[in-house]
Image (cartoon, rainbow, N blue to C red; front, side, top):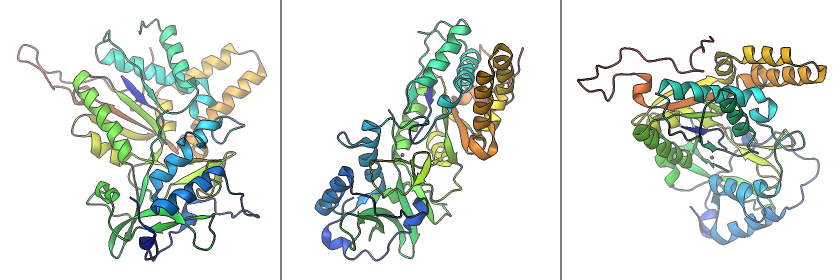
Length: 371
């Protein structure tokens, strides 16, 4: 089994830059609050300026890779971004219940698919290992014997001339400031836009497609499942590229290297990539998934066992953060990839073994039965 927990997502010459007619609406990707004073030029900003001067405007995907993973100046390389003192927090860091319920999900799928002796648990995503630690604790408690993925996006806008990719260039008015511009001609990113697309701004993530294809192939051949948890949408949103610094929105082009950059997952794209090889479920809201997994039962057990008011308060605060629709409950979603026969049944059966009429429900995507 595999689990994908988070996911985060051409050059033009100097002469070509001069003919780009349109400035991208940068406020779509910022906090909307301009700083009172100009931010100082960071080392990474100077690096990006030199790079753009040498090779021309860069894609948003390339910008995100540089900002987040540059080995010398990248945000993920030299900062502790998680927790209260960081810039964002993830569900496993909020409450132990989150990882415990995911552990139950994997046990449920393991049992539903025949309790195979070969079991691999793989987490793809940034963090401190908190999630896997909570999952493995569940494995241990149930007596089961079981032996950094950063994805960048491309932004594409519909224009009278057709789809055009959004690039990042140097502001001609200020040499140490960046801006969004439109590519003057077609780029490779446009090939990933669905032919029936009706939105006028689209974020595409080819790298996510590669990951999903690899997972789908493995699941189709060897079985297992992938559970993807992230903030996202089902092909409905347009501009979600944004930055976070100190748990607040941050202009994505300001002081690169000092803030996290992220974008919502387009689950409809993942479904299109995977559906020929495996079945998909979701996305469903985190609130619904965790409720189906029995988060209320688990919370009650932990509260009953705790005798310290501070511990109880921490548990209740974590529960509220995970489940409250105004916090993470509605914004985060779960999406699963499973073999077709796990969902539909009757596949790969022989005459000697009649097809099964029904299959057991997938935990989280239907209410979990507690015995």
